[in-house]
Amino acid sequence: MKHVLVIAGSDPSGGAGVQADLATLKDFGVPALFSITALTAQNEERVLQIHPTPADVLTQQLSAACEGKEVGATKIGMIASHSNVTALIWFLNARKFPHVVIDPILHSSSGTALLESKAHANFRQQLLPLATVLTPNLPEASALVGFRIYNEEAQIRAVKQIYEEMKALRAGQWPDRPLAVIVKGGHLEKDALDILYDGTEVHEFRATRIPGRSPRGTGCRFSSAIAAGLAKGWGLKEAVQEAKNYLTSYIELHH
Image 1: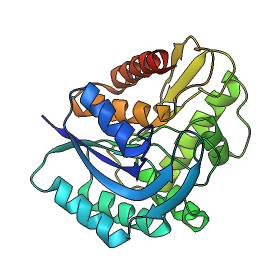
Image 2: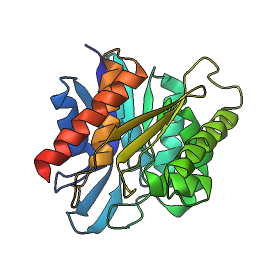
Image 3: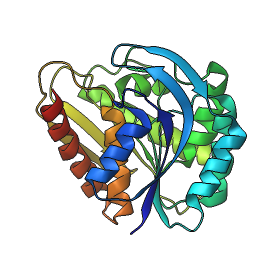
C-alpha cells in the first residue's frame, strides 16, 4: 500500500499537527511517514513557544523517511520558518509526488503566527503553486485573496481567484499535474460548507453545523483525510466527501 508523507509541526497536547495527522491516517488504514518542521509548546488555549527544525535536519528527515518507500501523497501543514519553506520547495520540485495536499497554516486557533513573516512571499509564490490540492480555511483564504469571505458567494469568488493565481504562478511548470482548491467554510455561521474548484466545476460539500466550539486540529485532520483517500487511489471528489464525513463524525464525537 502507498504511504502518505506528513510534513508538519508537533503538538504536545495531541490535538493538532503531526499527532492529529497520524491519528487520521491510522483511522483510514493508510501507512504514514512523517517529518517534523517544528517543536511547539502549546495546548488547547495557547501557543507558548515554537522551535523550528533546522532546515538541514528537516531535509535529512525527509530523505530518510522516503527511502525505499512508495509515497502516494504528501500532506503539508505548519512549516514555521523561511528556511524550511525554501527546503520544501526544493524537496517537492525534486520528488514530484503524484498528490501534494497543502493546508496553508498561517496562525493557530488562538491567533499565534505559525509562519515567519519573512517567509510569506516564498510560501505564497513558490511553495503553494506546487500543491495539487490547497485547503485554506476562511481566514487563510481571505488573506490570500485580500477580501473578507462572509457568505457562500464570496467563498466561490475566493476559491476561483486562488485557483487562477496558483495556476498563473506555476508558469508552465508541471503542466500535466492537477490543481484544485478547497475553501473550507467552518467559520461561517450557517451550514459547514466546503467549496472545491478544479478549474472546471464548483463542487459543494455541505454538512449541518454542530453547535458549540469545535475541537482543535480539524483542518489538520481534513487535509490528512484527503491525502489518505488520494493515496488509496480515490478520485478527488470521493476523497473530499469521505474526509468531510470523517471530520463531521470526529466533531460529533469530540464535541
